[in-house]
Image 1: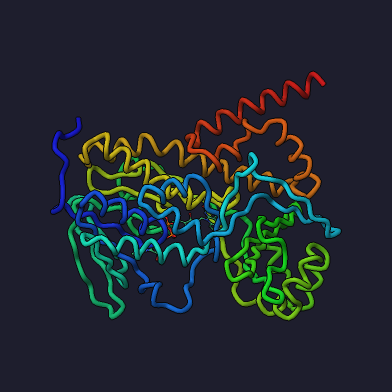
Image 2: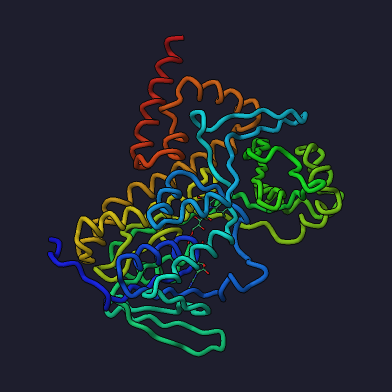
Amino acid sequence: ECAEEPRKDNVVVAVVGGGLVGALNACYFARRGFQVEVFESRGDIREAEIVRGRSINLALSHRGRQALSRVGMEEKIVSKGIPMHARMIHSLNGKQSPIPYGKKGQYILSVDRAGLNKDLLTEAESFPNAKMNFDHRLHDWNSDTGCMTFIRPDGTKESLQADLIVGCDGAFSTIRKQFLRQGRFDYSQTYIPHGYLELTMPAIDGEFAMKPNFLHIWPRNTFMMIALPNQDKTFTCTLFMPFDEFEKITSGDEVMDFFQTYFPDAIPLIGVDSLQRDYFRLPAQAMVSIKCSPYHIKDKCVLMGDAAHAVVPFFGQGMNAGFEDCIVFDEIMDQCNEDFSAVLPEYTRVRVPDDHTIADLAMYNYVEMRAHVNSKWFLFRKKLDNILHFLLPKTIVTFTRIRYHEALQRWQWQNKILFIMQLLL
Ligand code: FAD
């Protein structure tokens, strides 16, 4: 049962991880008046010149925007994003065909990961009751006492006790390790055979090299490249390919042969020299899908974002789902008068089925893409999209806040109809 009186300012909430979800969550908890301590293993990215991390830009859609709007950050972030109204499918012969996302006027936004993270940290820091602790890498923590031990860059250790620990420390979460030691904790992780590599397509004469308001896609069955626009008029291209294939390409000439075969129209736009150089700059990165349950331990700790559910990036929902976690938790905090012993189990109950569904949908998209996604398939789907517009899970997932598991149910229903239509026609 929920407590009657809300608890307030001397309650310490430790947010572990100052990435996208951690920084946003810090705003949510600070707004409620808790004493918020954010612990981030890296230094302050606002002071670093090069921010190492995953994808350079990402697609922000409705769920993420809603989560930002609740802390008054939507406009600021949206104004720096680049709207993408449609996908632009690049055929092998260079032909480009647009496929709009949803209804007229619907779009997703390409946002700069580092910029978004910096803005959220600055917003969190603007609350007098929120403190940022950079260069604090969580080493271990105790689920009975809420005592956490951090390691500083000079090797020294520091400890702090919190009333609530919010684990936002990403796919390789240290917080989650403690969950694995608990009984009845379900956990699964799957690495997919594909890796990804990022390449920059520079601006040409100060202008975008391709049409900017699109998410460009080169679907080639097993291989796929996408490109999202950046504010500086460059595009970041991401090449997805099985690791076996990455390993086959070992020289600049082989890179050129490969691009000539699969992405010839991108060669002059990326540039031969940069292509041959950048391809080898960093090794291809792995992608993992992680599901677990429950998301909480007693009234002490809760997992959110990738720490709770890393998803493969083929639905553009990882961050959006993590941001939505913050709203869902916030709503339950209202329902249960901030009584953690009621909020945490309720959060697990409500959120696990939805986050597991988005992990499944993203994996399904990946498998489907590997099997037969080429430009013909995309253009065929476009026709179907027009007919089955409102039923499509992609539209529901991207442009509404209908729960992920309900989107899946609608989709299964739609598939049944399609099957029956096939029998009849
Ligand atoms: P992270 O961003 O991983 O942040 C975790 C933070 O915790 C980091 O700052 C890290 O330094 C810190 N940390 C880790 N360990 C510790 C520790 N022990 N102590 C203290 N701090 C620690 N999502 C979308 O919605 N749209 C997209 O278009 C999209 N594209 C993607 C493309 C690619 C190639 C990839 C890989 C992912 C993509 N995603 C996308 C998913 C998105 O990147 C993640 O879902 C999102 O970054 C999750 O945020 P997070 O804060 O939970 O975790």
